[in-house]
Image (tube, rainbow, N blue to C red; front, side):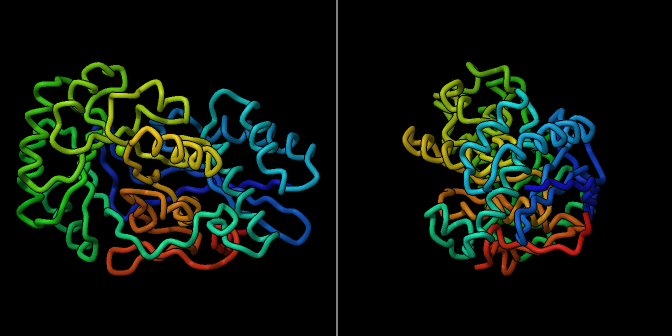
Length: 342
Ligand code: MG
């Protein structure tokens, strides 16, 4: 197998604000994995708060390139991914890129979409939330208008005055909301008061209300909350499900956090055994990584896969969006194409 990579900047239509920062673009690295006449594609999405840089991801891909030469066939997928995982204790986005490319390549070799090979079955078009980052009122009203066809909105909060932010949003829409606090609330009593207030404003769930290091407060909050509390930053990989058990009512699984489809499936199976809700989420990824995650769509309770709709220079074609729904195609692998040259 031959591995090629291409650094790229994905640009937002509107600068993207969360509780900790605002950015205009996200660095990514696209992968091309070749075997015989077949090509698989992958993507590592590297927003800076994850701590994975382009430099250390490229260094990781150099190691992975050597490792991949030890295998004759991409169909040894489990063995390959387990050995790639051992190359570094971190680099989860880099590992996810290789996992995605391998799944894509295998699908193409077998002329089947990944969802068939993974025995999941094709999902019907699903409602996905549309994300509204933190912004001024004028820009937010514009973004809400652009998201008109979506049935749910995901609002990023964690501002100095979240009640004012939501009151402002409610001037423009009465759609059900997912509220993503991105660890922005520090006091559990304040957080519980906010959750009750938000429930009255038609909020369906709250994502990561408090910082990762406040596990006891989070568990107190989840016990008392009238709506589901979903982990994001607190749960990256499979082992985090046990570490945070009791702190949340569900988990947001993202390929870039969990190292890819292989581990995401293990997490879904285990989380369901533990009666946790499953949200399938993404970083600010292109249609490449989003189409990979969409293969698992049938297994999610909440779908939050709108990243490509926030971008102005997505170089991949894959999943499509119509009437607020994300639609998967029947093409082999993860079902993507691109005119990028590596
Ligand atoms: Mg989140």
